[in-house]
Amino acid sequence: MDLRELVISSCKICDGSGVLNNERCSCRGIYNILVSMQIGNFPDEVLLKLYNETLLSEFELCDDDLYYNRILTDPDFFVSNGCGLVIYGVGTMKAASYLVYKILEHDSSLDCGYQDEHTKISVFDLSFPSGLEQLARVIKSRVLKLLPTILLVNLLDVFDSNKSLADAVRWGYGMGLNGEVFRGVNVIEKIGISRWK
Ligand SMILES: [Zn+2]
Image (tube, rainbow, N blue to C red; front, side):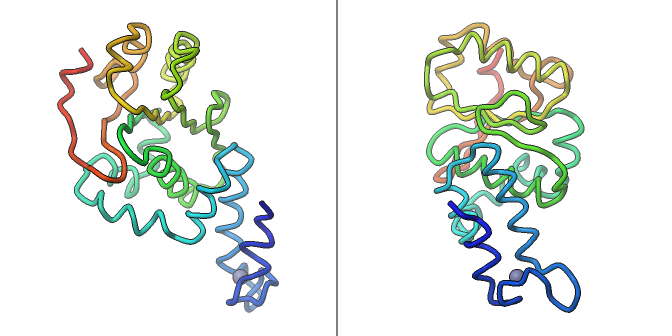
């Protein structure tokens, strides 16, 4: 997908020049974020939705989720403390992509990656049961380096069936992946943390 064509060339505000009154047009900021995410292997379909703001309207549903809001209002906290978030249920990739977008909007110098352990902000999809042991090691190492991490799962049962993974994302400040669990797009109800112990 040609993001320059999509975002800058078609911009009605600056007529595709990327410049407005000798200043950077807003389309360039959006372009830079989407390029970072494209380099980080986020799917084109999701980037397109972010650009069309479809995701943003979907996420008004999540207004009363505390941790979700904390990331949006204070992304520095999430990034500098190496926090984590586990998202489960429907629409997890969308939820994660939206959060990453908002974090990069706040600080565009950060790099991000989907299924890539080497970036500052990483999103891992645990829906594929292969390689969970390896992933547990990756997550543990990220926790030690205080690198913020978002995990996507279909069902939380994946932690019941994989001890090392459950251990890697063990709950509690200073104990493991700090963060909170929330459901994806459709349902925002949070669950108790006792499940992780
Ligand atoms: Zn523009």
